[in-house]
Length: 414
Image 1 (cartoon, helix red, strand yellow):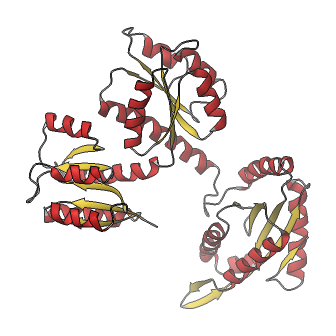
Image 2 (image 1 turned 180 degrees about the vertical axis):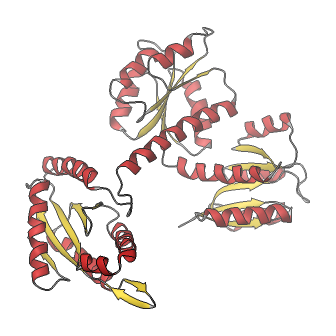
Image 3 (image 1 turned 135 degrees about the vertical axis):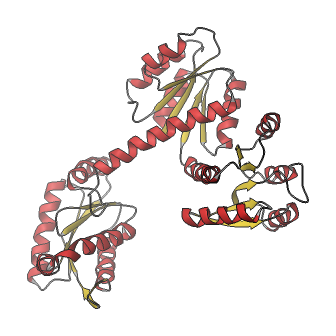
């Protein structure tokens, strides 16, 4: 279900712009109100339904920013969108707990507000660890990170930080203080970099000491960035966002390299790599696993006659495959074959899923010159607890050949 936003703004023009941006984003639903009273009514009806709020400070029935207190009291991440810049007021509002203070200078301001909302949504999935022997310092950093919807893990020193990384390998960013007993921040960075590359885990060093060379020492030891304490709240967020977005950009590039350019499914090479790893894991855990090769029947003949539509067929079939088997590993094996690797599932369940997919494909068509062209698939399925990937591919390939000899549009299993 799409996240819901609350916009409180008395300017018709601004509301029109924000309606358009929300519609373009496509990931959100929104309520748009023009006064404090209307906002209060919405929150009274259902205070838990809003993911975030964007509010104006100067409303006809709340000219002193009272709406900020209203949304914050409902524990809704709140962004101020205002026509005037006031440094003192901004600092006061940031201390109150707003996410950001954005001035309505031009159209880019509204785009920034929408970008920040998208960022808050993605932050829900990101874990950040704060390492500091001072409980007060940890809680201060955690409070700031929670405001931006990050998941926060706290560690009071290097030993607990390493234990946390082992227990929670999905931690993406570590913020570590320099001055800690037993193992300082430099040594912790070295320990972490012994296992995690900069492309996989970001580290930001912190220190309140006056040595100007600390930042260089942190970065030379493997940190990505450095921030001196006491830090400005906005600078803190900017550094966090910059490093998280750099990490995401690297992940996107890596993921693109592992994808088939046409269908967006994993390519053959990467499929082999992750399936070999998954099979080893399944064998260690004594979990059964299955492979299914899905062959588009008579695709070569179709592609020779309707070459300009061949790509459309593959794209449409791949979309349906990803949707049907979203919890498993899907890939494009070659020009006419797609493949799925499944685990923790019985042969009967596999067979049922594959036949459901086969029937689904039979209803799928490509329209060519106002004529609907339908295609079918044949599926070879093999369940195992010991076979390697190459053996599974060979078995499924033989089953595909038998299905095609029997007239296509079949699921055969071993």
